[in-house]
Amino acid sequence: MVKPIGTTAPRIKLGIQMRELRQNARISIEDAAKAVPGLNYDKLRRIELGKSSFRQVGDLRKLLELYGVGGDLELADSLEELYKTPTSQDWTTQFRGVSEGTRTLAGIESEATEFRAYHPNLVPAQLQCRAYAAALHRDVQPIEETTSEMIEGNVALRMFRRESFLRPEGPAKLWVIIGEAALRHPVGTQDVMREQYEEILRMAAMPNVTVQVLLTDAPVKRLWTNFTILELGRERPVIVQVDTPWGTSAMTDKTTQVARFTRWFNTMIASAERPEETPAFIENLKRATT
Image (cartoon, rainbow, N blue to C red; front, top):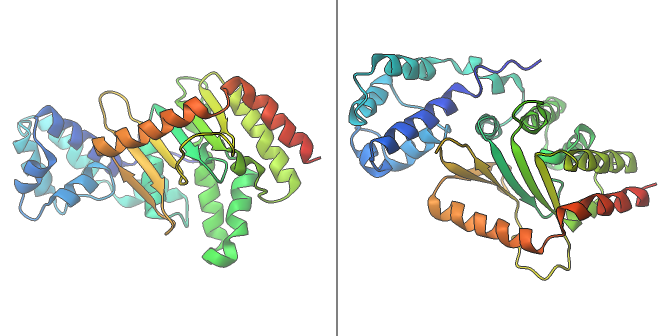
């Protein structure tokens, strides 16, 4: 049983809070980075995204002084505690064989209140059942040279990441657009595909989940890469995540890119089949596998 430390990985929680303090102080990330020797724009951005940490606790303290909260000892102590928390106490490390990028994404997802996801070629991770996720990894195992331990760890973490939408109290909102090709592309056996169709039907019936299908011949401009838009709530940054060909996860909170991907998502919403049409579409695919 996974036992998270708080609600998310300590490093990610530290990054989110440091960004909030900087924005409250109305200081740009460029100016903040210049105030600490050895720190630069890219390094501080990675820290705020939870993808890196401070070189030393003194750098953290200098930023707190810059942000005007250096005298708040209780706040400083809590942030230093997050900084000092050993990596071994990060709940995402319980999933063996999982890349650091995937663990970082899982930690950020655990803070998100709303997800908007699109995938043209595969069922999005948020909707995948265990059998489908495992089959995906096994299908490419000879190419990626992954071990059984790596597959088990990645599948277990993927299932855990879905808990945000499935919890009975205060579930996160999920809006998914799936390319028709993703639903017709066979992954694993027919039994696996039937189970996956049933899982999509189950989740599409949930009040916090919206699922749309973008038909292959729909007259719409579309992206040919998947992406997820993560809303962290409480005036926190909106983050866009994109899978890369190198098996890593690229993330950004730059306003221009968030706006760009939001426009793409809204364009595809308007051209995809209506959410109430999704169950009948999936049922037809399910019947075709029998």
